[in-house]
Length: 364
Image (cartoon, rainbow, N blue to C red; front, top):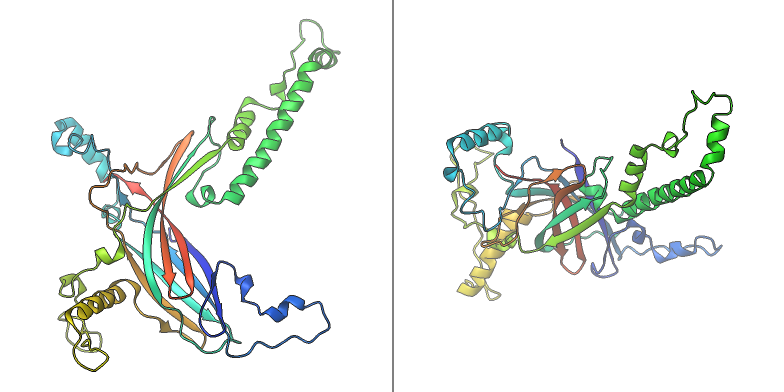
């Protein structure tokens, strides 16, 4: 599927971009707060800067590789299994499409900056840093869960609280009616069988009104428990994933010439403030900065008078010596496990924003 998740943030400043919010309601000027008064509104000067940043990503089809417990890493390998077990494993592996057998190594994000038409012209804020976390989502209940769950639902505290509150109310009502039925069971049964002979008499039970299945379903949703645990050390930092400038994977093919031979990206010489060549330390820092820009955050591209777009490639590489176990994603009648990759984006002097992208963990 190609579902898209998005998150928006806003920025506003009088002389520089100095605030990031998660709501577009902060985009209005102070004069809008007195809209009920007869006093004319103060026009926002063109020196102020307003804008909106959208962060979007498609849900990836590829999966993160399963990480087994340390006790099993050496023993639970294909070579140590019996011939029959190896054949069974191969049969299971064949059910996975070839396109999904490669592990997920990168997330592609799109940033869209939309400036307000009453804003002073200004470049979009630059990206200072990008970090990643793996969000582990575990859901469980004492009874079979009657609905299909997903990571978006389980991470929405407001919606979860609404579900629990609603079905807790239903559960309490059922218990109340059950108590009243039990207290009046003899009278209700007598009334129920008033026109029946003793031979044809039937016992009226509370389950004739509320079945055990309905009761269990309501109790399950009323007692649904969710645990969310962020793991910040699963993936390497983005700077640690940068490739060297002469890496073959960074070769590009010219688009404006007839040649199909890949060529290296060209880099500008790094000079100091006096016009001379930069020191080795300066060159090293700028080299990392250049690679970070070219390989991960790219540059803003203007798409319209008030709109800019930026493509970001977030690398997902496991840290060495990870102690955690990543259980494959699953959903059963009593419990489930989902995962999200949280991408945090920090802007220069503006603040930060994040987006949670659902991913799956598979053993392949």
